Image 1 (cartoon, rainbow, N blue to C red):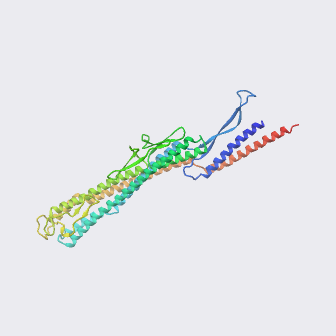
Image 2 (image 1 turned 135 degrees about the vertical axis):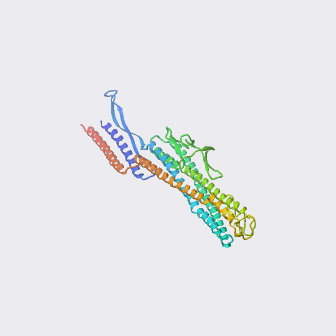
Image 3 (image 1 turned 30 degrees about the vertical axis):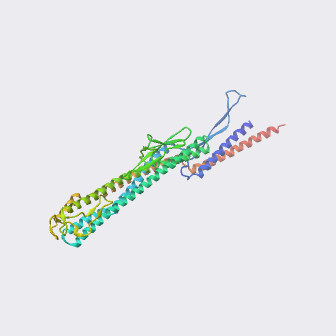
Length: 445
């Protein structure tokens, strides 16, 4: 009986000591990002008692089965999914805000209004040199403003493309690390402390990856993970210890696309998707801005060709260029403005052609188109901001739910610390009692 007490107490003390170690680890890592609370898994240890009956079972202590992580696969998947959606929305809003600033703060709308206003002033005295010079200056300012807006959009596009390439590199880096973790997991002992640490690393890498691109994880019996990119029907990014390579291609209009080992890959969430959507909006904005600049150049130069300048010569183009980036004022003197109808004599005060120019500009309505463009971008920013805030709230809720289930509660750990300490001391006392019983038996005369 005393021998049974010793073995039972010994197994109980070992289990309590392991539980104390895990509790200490939980407390020490309570604030560590990605750490999942550990608990001990135990089971009763039984032995047959042949002396009493062949089928009788006597309890012989406790067996430590291993270390268990309090991780919920469903909640982890929700954190990855909602986090990917929030990251996509955040990246898209940031890109749209930069586009809005590039177009709005450069003052293209104000420059168009100022140019049309100078033409209106010239109508009062078509031969006035100062008014003609003002038209040229406002036209030069207009073209330079379009140039600045185009350059600003170029800078925004370069920034988005750089960030996207950085995201692609990050996915490849995380995939490589995850493959190495898979290899170590395949060799780790089941439910060992080393395995649980590797599982924390695995889950942390998956969460980091999901913020960049939409990935889907499937768990294998040996605790390794296989990852596809682009959703459940996407291509395999990580399988065991092997990885595929994600790459990015940039089109002529600045938009981007992705391939995985050469095959087209669809990325619909994560920061990469957000930057791709922002670049698509950027290409559309640039196209509208180029069209608007080309329309102004065409309307003005067409009107010039239909009139006569101050010297009585046929009107020549005032602007050159085919878009916002290369639009330029090429007239060098105010006398080049063809205010009079074709065939008019020098110094004609007839503003017929200038009136036609203003009517054509009113019909083309460049200021109205620019206002519409600005409103479209602002509306997109406002709408995406609301979506981003909602998605970030959802992602935060999912993360809180996971933390409540898998995180460390210091109050609970403090209780466990006392409980396991008492269990360890109680088992020690049992061993002392067993020793006393042996001594009493041996001292019988």
